[in-house]
Image (cartoon, rainbow, N blue to C red; front, side, top):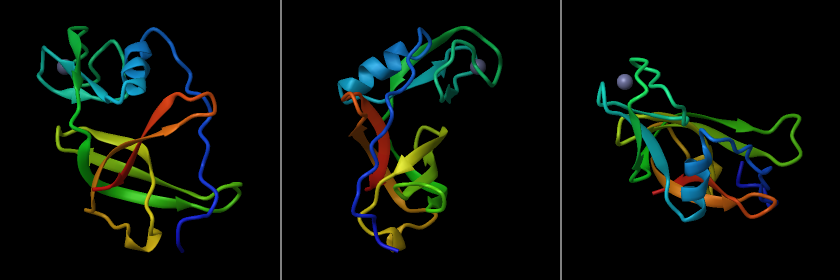
Length: 133
Ligand SMILES: [Zn+2]
């Protein structure tokens, strides 16, 4: 199956104090990860406490936005516009659930190198996605 002709339009993301910096930086074309200063491990999605050790000593760090597909699926049934979802393992060691946009769905495979991209939501907010590297 090739890429559907109609591109997916994202709903506007829900923003709150915990993810405000994340969305603000995404609008500037940067993707931020939270990094725990106590256990020296990054995590995603943004939250005030480290999911690995429970510390509140976290800071924002820019991600290079490069990694590989851990696994993926084609969402085609019961949706108006088919799309790809993937778990991407970033080079920073964090695995993230993300949309994947690829010109040829048949070329997508586990282990494929991907990089960060952005797609605009209905109101123009940059939404991080991944594309083939
Ligand atoms: Zn930690």
